[in-house]
Image (cartoon, rainbow, N blue to C red; front, side):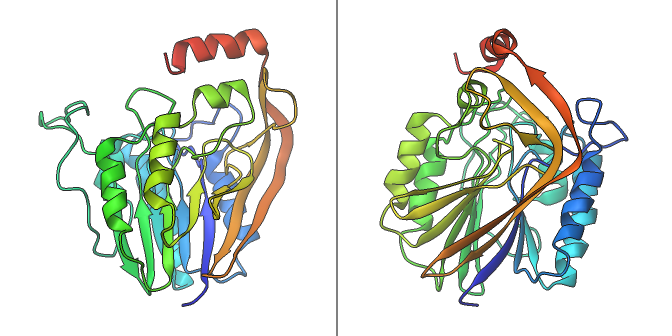
Length: 301
């Protein structure tokens, strides 16, 4: 398998009931529309890079599993899931395990003492895993900070990553993480972005390794940026399309669905974004004052 064919989904924001995102968007319908749009294409991986759930319910994770796992299996593909800032580690792990169901994975040995305790009083370890299948190594990282919208990577995760990529895999390595290690296009998203320390730590540990692509989400619009020769692919959100050209101080999104078709090999990475209107209507619009209030409440202090 010298070329890895990936359907990259992100920000599905599924509910465990019939709730609508922002009272407007049927996120399950959006997911099914995205799958239908690429149903005739072959894939080796179906990746969902975070914000899988909107409400953190077990039912929402069961829904994504029941939609994506059979769809992937019909094509001989496997699924990979990563935590996003809207996700809940308990519900996620109960249904999706360590993010790479169906294959043996390696995970960090211990939880970070900085994580809040789970229901049994033990620290709740981030959802992190690595495996190698068909010569391709896939690594799931957890950039989430419980209760916050912005992202971080603990030193434990960065050390785990460094160890995982010490030697090359058969064909290469793909990393899946929610918060992209590249800057955002708006003030709001930058306030909720991955912190600079984490991004620098990640690049320090994977520079000059066999990492061939980093798959991310969070921004709800497509970006492809190459850093040290490694492409970061930010897929369009399944749930809506965020405006990238309306200026940095405002934030808005329209009723579109999206995904990205990614082909990775040792020689090249090809990204074909999918972004199409459902109704095309505006989902929300926040002016500069509203954005400032959100940043004050949810941004990094």
